[in-house]
Length: 118
Length: 118
DNA sequence: CAACTTCATCGTTTATCTACGATATAAGTG
DNA sequence: CACTTATATCGTAGATAAACGATGAAGTTG
Image (cartoon, rainbow over all chains, first blue to last red; front, side, top):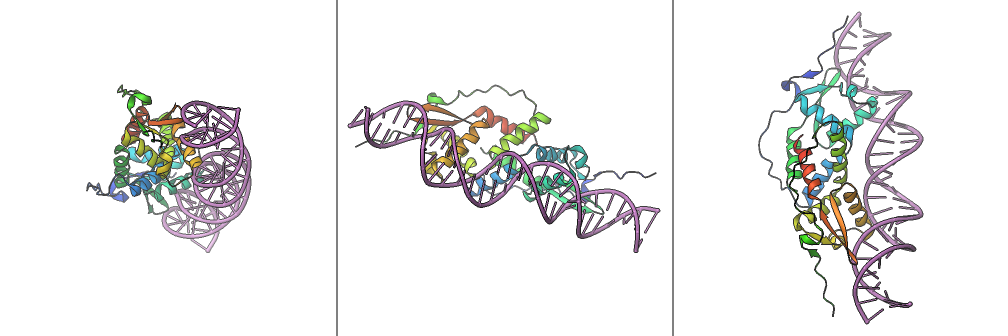
């Protein structure tokens, strides 16, 4: 019999340290508009919102069973993860045969600041 | 000679009253995911972010010179306005030959709540 | 090394988005 | 009523997005 590896890792495994330093970038202006649009676009799909929530809730690295949580094919989930990663909202770290995902708190904070600033 | 009409209207013209009642809908769950994704998608384009900001800043109805503020054709701006309107983020009210736009504070608050709840 | 696991990437199909010019609509103006 | 103005809608072309199965790459296990 084979025991499944735990699919949630402690913060130390790959999650970025809780970097609390303030973001000095402006929350409005042309650049901020682009930035907000990019982040919003990345969140513009229910599956990606769900993924982000999963990772926020765990507040730790989560290895690939994200696929099991969504009613989508593995390749589709992988694509959604890529979108979130490209937007900088999550981070993926290779851990042996799997990949551990966690949120990028900096970017999430930035998103909240941009939306809050509306 | 013809004087241009002022293109910003007072709140009373069409802006919804500052309805401060709390939104009781949950900020997570499948429905909230869909809702957030829809709102985020609507914001997922720089032009639409810019439009929203214009309306927020004015905090009043703004008649169509939104077109003049953007480097886009009138028909394109009209489409973006429609996206924002469909998402419930803005409202457009016919005012004689023009249309006055203003933000829908309820939806904007809702968006902030959803994002803040991440 | 062969088999298996985990995940990313490729190739494809279908759908949606973005932008524009052209045209329609609707309300004021002479 | 003809004419102008302000917007919306239509039609269309090109770009992106979303989904899937199939395949590839990298690590683990026997």
